[in-house]
Image (cartoon, rainbow, N blue to C red):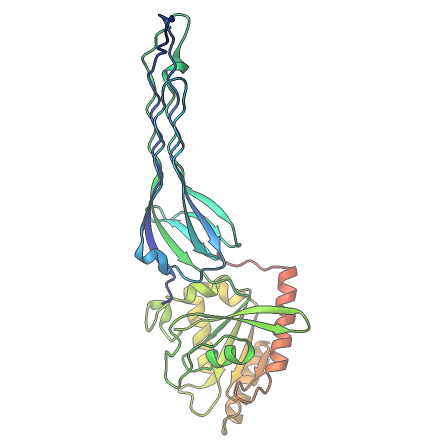
Length: 341
């Protein structure tokens, strides 16, 4: 099961109380204060791990609480610090404060960690409050409460290239043909119900990551079909490939399909249509596609879009497409464009 959004409650540990203790030793009738400090409460820490791909584990455990600090003791003994709680998240997880909507952290690299809830401070023992005029202080501090937060975690896949297209446009077939990804493929709409990632090798030792984004139909930005549930995964991509079915089986004209796709992306996030992009005309191996392909190519030439006719079944045009996208990705990596996080 692919889970890309959950809500959790986190509670850092409370700080331990300081001690109000006095020395009690033989032959020392007037021992002074020796109360130790309380230990700090444990923190709640989130860390990114490339071993995880979804937020599924957090769906079944939504409450994380760190250990409280121990109280201070006699003879200036400090209490033990509370044990922290460390929660592993997939790389690409954005952490929001559910109450305010503020972005608290964005974990984009493997091993990156953030203290999301700070443990409470341990209280000082009475030994800290001795003065020349108050040699027998009975006062000590109580520990403070740890932070408690209601969080929303949102996973946005990290990919160089996003594949966008209507159902049955050939996204899953293409990603299976150019990478080792093996998504479910069938001849009915909405076969792909979860995003898929594939690593595409090109050149001798270079590669880029492609994400297959499911669920785009007319009205997706308004919640129709799968809605914009998975469109968030395209926000981090540096380049977008628009897949257009030019076969005679396609329900819509290719130019109309492309325009509707770009309108939906613009309605979701207008910056997406300003990303580098290319048009991929799919299923050119099917008879009766020449007129529809010519219409799309003429449209792309007029709008100055790069257009690649391909067939994942016969692998026609894939070499040229991979080489072009690879060079574009290499260029974007050296001069990164601004993308939403």
